Image (cartoon, rainbow, N blue to C red; front, side):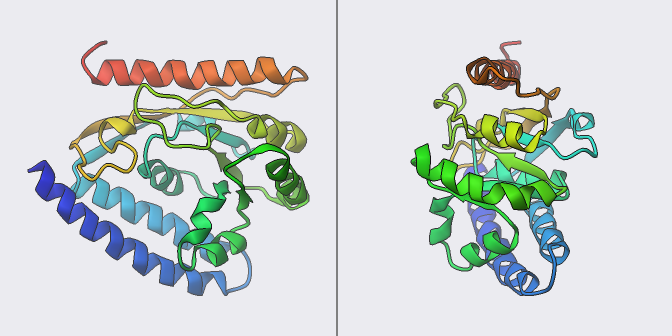
Length: 241
């Protein structure tokens, strides 16, 4: 049954994605951010729908009260492509920091540019910092929450990558709080795995953190917060808690 669900999900995934790629390209040609923002929100909702009703993945969404009207930087654990769909369907309006690997997909580059995304090299370092600095002026005027994945990579449940300091610089330079996000979505949709496992998973927004002068202390706190809560969610939903 899981295999059949996964086949049907794959068909629906690409049908919806290709359809919205065309729709969002048209919306991106319209003036302002709002038409495209609505298109991306609708895409996230459509993907959340097929995740639930085809793949059988139910989202237990917690802690949205930590998303105030004041724009924040959302620093999220990244276990699956489904993470982004949950964010698009939940946080509106939403801007995001994207890896340059997404530019290889047709139409995506145009959509990302119009959406005001900050596109960074996955190699990080000075080049990534220079691109982020060039985007700060536009982001200062932007009242949207900004989504960033501090690890820069997909991580299997129980796995983690080094946290990159771009999230600290972004939040400090913009004067925004950082809202950590823990997840157990990888238990149902592990990275790019074909088989999707029907189950209820959790995506949890955690209390905001303010970046202070001590960059290393902030990064340790952010990592401990996200990884600690993610481990608790995975343990509880695997029957360990």
